[in-house]
Every structure is written in C-alpha cells, then in structure tokens.
Amino acid sequence: MITSSISEAAQLLKQGQVLAYPTEAVWGLGCDPKNEQAFQNILELKHRPIEKGVILLAGQIAQVEHLLQSLTPKIRQQVINSWSNRTPVERATTWLLPADQQIPTWIKGQHPLVAVRVTTHPLCVELCNAFDGFIVSTSANPAGLTPAHSLEQAQRYFGSTLNYLEGDLGQSQEPSRILNALTGEVIRA
Image (cartoon, rainbow, N blue to C red; front, side):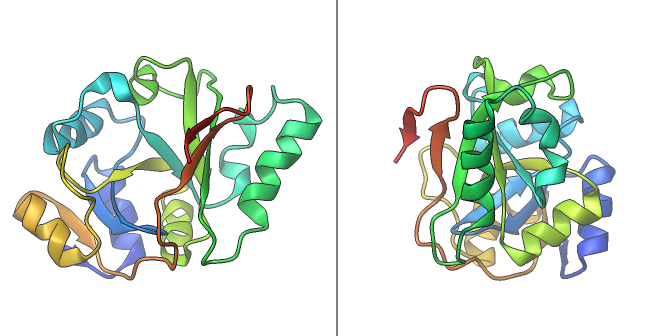
C-alpha cells in the first residue's frame, strides 16, 4: 500500500506494520521499535543479522531526552547542537548513546549503546510526532545492495510486501555520519 497520509502511516506503525519512507538522504525501513515481530520482519526483508543493531529516528529531542541524561553537560550539548543547528543540505548525525530500559535489547544488537538520530526532515519529523515517539530507521535495501533513493527503487526491492509513505528525500547527499558520544570515535565518517 502507498499512502501520502502521515496519520495513516503512523497508524500502520502502531499496528505492527513495516513502513518504507524517505529520510534525509535515502529511503528507510521503519517500525515500532518495541514490536519485536515487526523488527524481525525488517531483519528478514533486509537479510540483516540482528547483531548489527539499527538506528532509532526521532522527530524532536524530547522523544530521546531520557537517553541524554547520563551524558556530561558538555557532550549532551554537543549532541543537541548537532541535531538542532543543521541546515537541510548538511549531513545528519547519528549518535551512539547509553541505552536505558526503554530501549529493547534487539534494537542494539550486540552493542552496549543505541544509535539515535533526531531528524530535521519534515516528513520524518511529522511521522515520529504522529507516532508519538522514535521509530526504527534502517536503509531500505537488502543487505549488500545500494539503499533505495526513490519510492520506485524501494518497491523494486520489496514489492507489495511493504507499506510505503510517499514523499521526497531530503537534500543530504549521504546517509548520516555516526559518532560515539562517549568516546568521540567516528563509526561512519
């Protein structure tokens, strides 16, 4: 099913469905991160091992505030600034943050930290806000293939097995960079 309705897409997520949607640079696959079956469906679609973990996408800092509490004030501000002070063409930043009890273990994979990004992509912001929280965000492609850059490419990969939220990609040319908030290590430059 293809929809252009944010509320319909959020409802699909709440019902345990997998959704393909445009992000800042590539199409993503998303689901309710607390729904283990929906998450398993994404792993099967992508042929992705659970050990790798996935990114959580939020529409506003308040949705992930609980994950920032254990950071030092300086690091916390650095993370917030990277999410708040970004132009649409700048590359987004995903941070590896200490997970708390609200983060299901399957989201982290084999890692002690959880990958989190607060988006400025208008459609993704609306989707997360309509869902009332963060969602899973992993590139829309089977393992080893190029991430989808259009609705049509996502459909070629996944056909009618998915729900799709129509919309445009953001203006970023590359997927988000990934940084470890605790060590400063660059995971994906």
